[in-house]
Length: 370
Ligand SMILES: [Ca+2]
Ligand SMILES: [Ca+2]
Image (cartoon, rainbow, N blue to C red; front, side, top):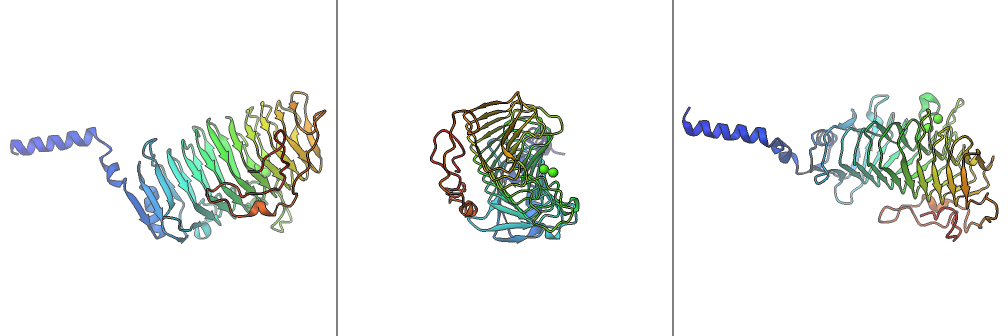
């Protein structure tokens, strides 16, 4: 070997050892995909900075789409439609029990895609950190639409999701929630602008999640009704199920609404933590508007009207102020009790549709419904 060759080889080895990001950079381009195989490969092989753009169409994967590849704070991985095209990923050809999309990774942004007809959960993010889910739909699947789970689930944002029509037939509807943040821990998780409706179990469920989650600008409605002619139907139908499995957690719910659910609008579900609920509205749920019989919730400026079991069930540790069941607080009239407009298309920026449903014009009590 000549001296020159040896030097070159040494330089290459040094480069390879010192800059492990070289292969990453080679994959960090924009990837445009238009068939299911390429979509699956692009997701699996993503690296920091990869932008996966999916051409219009409905994709039918035959195995779960999944990745463990992390982005970074400055080079996120993006999965999104090409331009403003319409992209649906349909689980109809998946084996029983499979999910459409499983992510175990950090710093991904997934936007603008519909995940539908999954045999089980549609999207599961396991021990994810700093992911953003924006304007996605998780609909008509066989278990919960969207799930965050596992320890080290931190700083994830779910913005403007629609999750509806999910139903676990094998278990008679007892498990399929709109959004499930369950069996895990980690701070900084936020759900905002969600519509969670007509799911067989709950709109939102925090069962066995041991860190506080923040919810705002979210609607949960029509959950827990037997829409599937299931003679052994077992869905619970809480709008917001805020605990369970012995966890004591101070979740925070601001400016959100629950209506027409088969269970309670908002419930601690045995969570004895200091759950904070402010400026929310519970309307025409079959059970209680607010069920906090055993915990230490802080209920402020909430509005409960026409709920089947009553406005609120609150234990002696609950702090309650400025709600329409508190003394001296009047109940403002709703400008509309027709929910039709709440199902309209979202605004162009992805936020909830404009509605007067359950608005009152009050600046002091109830959800503003936006
Ligand atoms: Ca249940
Ligand atoms: Ca549930």
